Length: 258
Image (cartoon, rainbow, N blue to C red; front, side, top):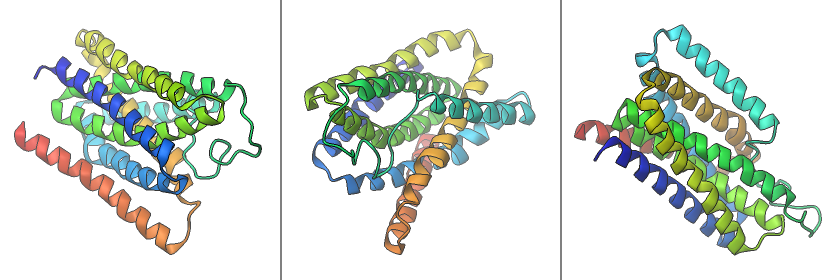
């Protein structure tokens, strides 16, 4: 397979799979099942960062200081973007989308805000996937898997917000599918742009590290602390470990076939 084929396949699979699984959970599953997805996503994100992305990023960077600065800049950037509600997603059990104070909707305002932010997010994810595949296929596979694992609980939140905002199930599904197409566009555009701008690959991988660290530590883990009971904590630790193990296994398999 060519690198472009890998990128297109990963972004298409990532977009379609995350939306399909999220729709199944949002339309049928109980809200209490969402933390299961979130715990696994935390493990996948942290595993991708510390087992694959971070070692590779420091290996191809001009200097460790340059890469550390890129990651620090990325974390601060994503903090600002989230403050601007560009990346605002619901990851916890009790929030306005899951437990609205009144049985009314807002005529689509919050749903449209979420879709604008999610489209931007998916485009950036596509760019990061392309940068990882251009570095090497193994890194691309691991990065795509981690992004997919994160997208599922995020998309569940998006569906719930859209439904609360007054959209029908069919409209919510269509909007999420259109938004996921931005991942494909980002991946393809980045492939052609980065072919002649190889010096940007290390920086984009650094931003991928920053985004995954920020999402897992700032957005997802705080939601897990809302369930402090021993049984829930043990379940979360096991699922996080399973997410890390999945990334390690995928990396080992990709490395053995390289």
